Every structure is written in C-alpha cells, then in structure tokens.
Image (cartoon, rainbow, N blue to C red):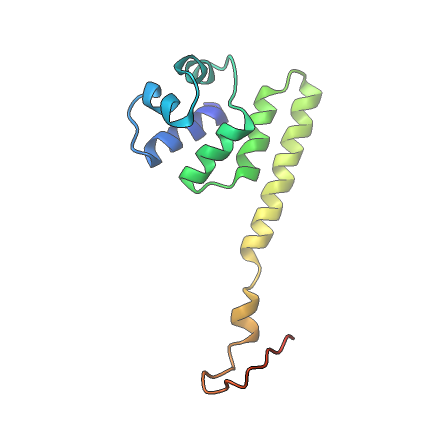
Length: 121
C-alpha cells in the first residue's frame, strides 16, 4: 500500500469519515482527486498533506517527504526524497528522545522560592 493511501485512511479514521466523497469535501478537493490518490494516478499537494497530518496528529515532516517520493518521476528524484524522509525521521526521533530541559533544570526549585528571578543554567 502507498504512503498516500496510508495517510488518507488515517485521516478518514481520525475524522470518523466513511466515504472518499466526504473525505474530499472535508479536505476541499474534488472526489476525483481523492480517487486518483487511491489509484496512484496522482498525490495530494502539500496543503492536503498538512491538513491530514494536523487532523491525525502525525508529523508533516515524515509524511510530506514520503508522498513526494511517490510523486517523483525519476528513480534519482525518488531516492533524494527518501533520503530526506530518513533524515527527518532521525531528527524527529532525536528530538523526541531528548530530555525535557524544564524538568531537568528546575526539579530542585520549590514553590516557596518566589523571588521573581529566573535562573538559566
């Protein structure tokens, strides 16, 4: 299955949409556009990808690169988009695994210490 179809199905599930016609209406595109996405004849534009990602809580950076790779006309272009998708996944993972600065740096401050000063470490 293509990444376009995966995201489209996630969007429909997140929005409790049962038909592609209703899906097209909610995204502001024609039903033919969604049909072409399903059949691999075309792919959603960046605005539609973003709208689906916002509704599903998925990261735009992950999906946009994957869908652009599907849209690519040459194997070389597809390879470039897939490398960008890989890099975006690595950055997303690194940011997600990094410790929370607020929790790490301010854990020892009590609520009674209300001097009005902010200390940055």
